[in-house]
Image (cartoon, rainbow, N blue to C red; front, side):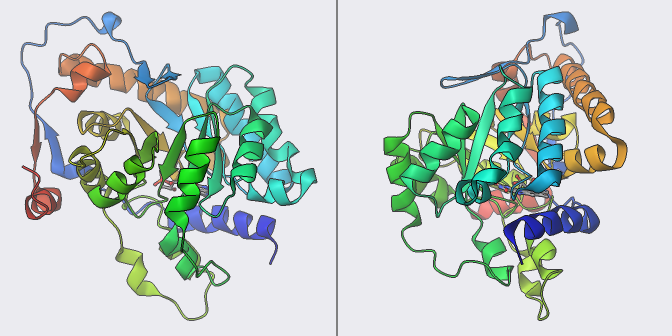
Length: 342
Ligand code: FNR
């Protein structure tokens, strides 16, 4: 099966398996304030993440890898949404375009459509330094996402089986490319130890890609004869992953993703230490089912809702939001307690 066909399969199975919604956000509660003395008009949604400036804490996370006309079209539409709303956007894996030059236009269209936007390139951890440079150049990207997706590869019938030297390859890329490197999971979450290892080799940010949204074990199991169902419930939820990153002994920025559906999930993510939140499956579903304009409306509504939430919490900006007290219950509480996060 060609890489492009496999990636289209991913889109279809990701849409049909849906979002698990076991991300843990229901375990996180804000403490209501009856006297929030702020004016909604004064709220600032921008996020400064080292050298990256995002005008909004929402970004479109990596989705369309592969190549071909369908990838080009989805990338163009997502880029148009990003351009019109001013949000950041990651592309899906560019490996196919590095292997076959004619696929490059499926990605170059993203920069062409959104010349001034914040765009993240994307490759897997098998990438070499040269490939990383090419992926960044292809998009004039502002940062590079390197995805780590061991469980997906294991369940994928034709997936990788050799995961040695991942960290040293990532370290080489960090040392040799000009833009910040973000290491991201794809829905299985990240532990404190993983975050600390990545920080120790100079990674700029992690995207925790937590469990509870798009489930790539289920997506890949749909493509197998003998299913590896035990991986369908494998992973660290998004809220527990955010706590893992928060309690890591590491100087590193954090992005939240994995099942984010609404502005409250995003606000909870920021309060748990994230600088921004990535939406993948939920946005793709809206784009495919309802079209580009519907996705633009969704982004604008998310921003409006986020402003209402910040007003209720008396937070003028993301830094204020991070200081707000939270109550943690349920499985996320038990996870945090047993992991010694108090
Ligand atoms: C993805 N994701 C992904 N991630 C990545 O780093 N490179 C990629 O090429 C892809 N491809 C891809 C295709 C499709 C169809 C989906 C839905 C997702 C993973 C994505 O960026 C994200 O980490 C997970 O989907 C979890 O977020 P959501 O979907 O729960 O918001």
